[in-house]
Length: 110
Image 1: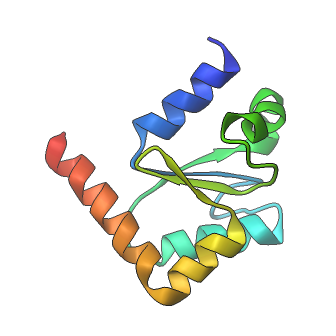
Image 2: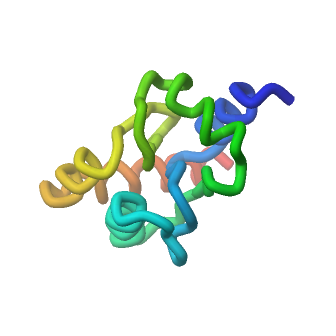
């Protein structure tokens, strides 16, 4: 399967997904750590992709949504942004609402 198709499958197949360096429990950079922590505080499960374990995704994800850095957080198939935007949304209380609505909607449709 083409790498862009694999990325698209992850983005569209999960209500919330973070492409990050490492994993939520073992992040490999500070930006990924802070973004994953904000998502964990939203009290819903989310998918994650460790870009360090997949060089093709690491190299091609910046082209997918024209966003050059990691992490990248997608909710309902849409790029929300990276660490700074995620933390800003979290501090405003908006991230939790967005994540909970996306996950609850996906569960209701399943």
